[in-house]
Image 1 (cartoon, rainbow over the protein chains, first blue to last red):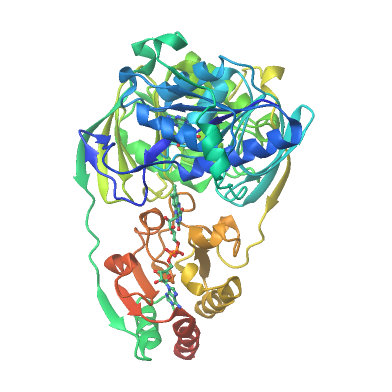
Image 2 (image 1 turned 180 degrees about the horizontal axis):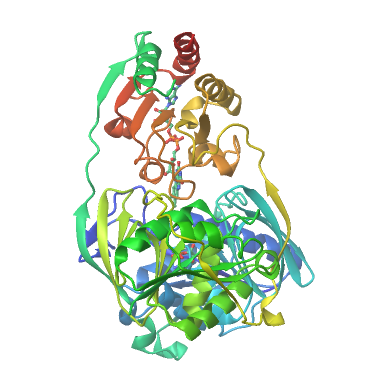
Length: 254
Length: 322
Ligand SMILES: Cc1cc2nc3c(=O)[nH]c(=O)nc-3n(C[C@H](O)[C@H](O)[C@H](O)COP(=O)(O)OP(=O)(O)OC[C@H]3O[C@@H](n4cnc5c(N)ncnc54)[C@H](O)[C@@H]3O)c2cc1C
Ligand SMILES: Nc1ncnc2c1ncn2[C@@H]1O[C@H](COP(=O)(O)O)[C@@H](O)[C@H]1O
């Protein structure tokens, strides 16, 4: 089974984000592979361990996004493709999906795995758009994945509980945090990653033009949200519970 | 001649998802010439009454099981065809899992601008979104061809009926090609929850990693039971740890709640948690760390051990109720 994993390089979520000209400021904050995408890499590695085949890691982003690909390779993925192009700065979800779909189509695949939503963009729609552009079905929010010959059985998280979904291959799926326990790269893995094949391609290499990547939404204004000021704070001296209960009574909820 | 469409997502039981009424309420204020809905799946025709009450004049409806049995593709196909036929200016839909799955495909099929996770819509080409855990609000200008698609976060506004008559039902006559019937839902499971729903309860008591272990959620259940009409929620940390089911998660990747009172116990107040509860009318926090970020938005903060304070609070509540 040949599996493509989509991984995104993001500013480290441990650092506060900042907007510059309506875009997320990149470059300053230390960058990491989106923690949500590590689950995708792990899921792909497990399928390939079980069924054979290769894991191909694909990312779109600035040159530094190569690090996310390297990280996936050091976890055990086989090869990678980075799409990087000046015309891609500020790409929105649909532009991103067009680029990723074009990159995926360059080789045979049985399955594409992505995260449910990226930590910095959190649009949560890129993978479904990729599915549409590839002309394959999708199953999102996978909490458990079981593969049979030419289909997957997915336990899909829902707001109320879960669904079971039968999804024929090839397909795009998204995985939730907690679908598995992502492995850490071993020292051997890190060394091996250095010699694994990685392709760097531009929009033109994918047969796309600047129009395909043009975002159609732009930030007009950035305003601070109305502040919600802090109220009273007490060190609990044994009467904390009573203070809370008094407030509940006052608010007439008890 | 602006025509606004609202995608009226139906729940498994066939009822209109509550958040659709919030969207209709907002859509009524945008000065459109027509406000219409698309409803697909069992319950669609019957939804006309409720949708009309919130201002929709027409609903393009199909009760076909195909739309609930198969994931996204049949609905995306039909919606794309309807858009081509009727050419709305703006399509609004809820930012739910299923609407995301469906509308993302519609956007990709037709090359339409899609703004997801919006927290308001100001005009047919202008939206707002809260970012950085709600610290900043950005105004977004929507370019590209009409219609643009906007997915709105649940609870972004309050639903208010307009007292309209039932919407006029137009049966959807678009055929669903077999090629779109691929990923299929074979089973549905709902966590059985007792008491009020998290999104509707006037009081939410919520627990985080500070509760130390799964068993201690029992303390919150006891407190909720003592208060009555209260639901128990959780931070993602404890959902990921497997202490409680995902259906209890509050925050960016969980539910959004706006109760009269939110009681955060052993929750640090990460931005991703705060976006899901910061619009609560009152916030009470119990945390042993005086510098926990949750205190910066709490109306009442108790710096202390939640495992001690919660049972005491349960007793205090019981005694005040008499
Ligand atoms: C993309 C993304 C999406 C996310 N979505 C969500 C989301 O939807 N919802 C969400 O909640 N999080 C979400 N998170 C995770 C979020 O960043 C935090 O990690 C999480 O909210 C922390 O949960 P917590 O407050 O329970 O745990 P911690 O941050 O570990 O906080 C535990 C708190 O308990 C206190 N404590 C410890 N012992 C006691 C005691 N005995 N009594 C009282 N207090 C005590 C500590 O002082 C601390 O403040 C998301 C993260 C990412 C990257
Ligand atoms: N620039 C990108 N490069 C590679 N994968 C991406 C990119 N953007 C989004 N994805 C994938 O799509 C998922 C959802 O992202 P989003 O729709 O942006 O929330 C991510 O978890 C990634 O797997």
